[in-house]
Length: 170
Image (cartoon, rainbow, N blue to C red):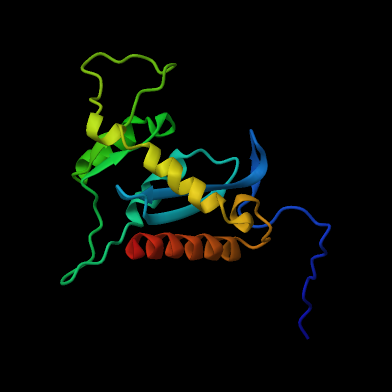
């Protein structure tokens, strides 16, 4: 005989939750194209740093083509200061991805040339923030009500599908 643990509504937490500056929650990591259409989605606990999920999120990109294998490498990547790490820049360079990541202001200065920032990539950083705003228009995503991470991820994927459909219907 199997016993199932029944969770009551008063219990807190769930899968992939952790304490961050904003409280207890889940972080969403997105890679979007130039129009704000999500290409890859990853979730992590709120207390984990963004860099722990950066490589996994970029590796999750799969853009289908008419023929052949799906495309897995974007031409360029614009990220915010939270993704400023030498190993991540080297990993992107090794994959042939041009990166535009500004330096952290408190980072120690190393000798040599600072990384170049692409104006073409950095000027479109607002597209990512707009996609997060589109996702937050879904109440179940802005405030995580789902206890299970796979249900929450399913809601995010459903919202991403509607974003894609809206872009196709324009």
